[in-house]
Length: 136
Image 1 (tube, helix red, strand yellow):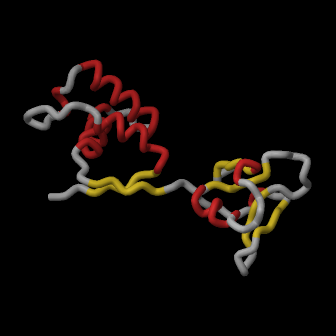
Image 2: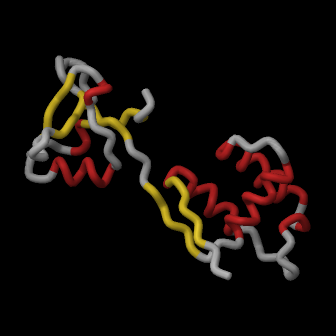
Image 3: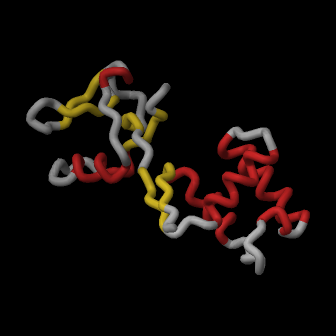
């Protein structure tokens, strides 16, 4: 049976750490060395907010045994880095044009790749913008 996971891009480094755990002959991650297990449990606790050790091991085992992982880019609101502008949050009009808003709620949520694509042919350099958590 093939295991395919879909995870947020922000978990990529955690997943790489988990998948770097050497495979145990019988495949039982409960038997990995104590230090490695504690490290994985701490990482899972911090990244996924899981406190139950049994659930943490299940998550680690699932990630470790996945055949394929699809990554989802997180979406952010974007704004000009300088606060000298009256309107600095980025939005998109109905024709796909770039708009600037004063209020963050008016800005569109976009992944980094979507935002870079939006900036193409505008002359606006990506480096002049910063991402803001979409829930802010």
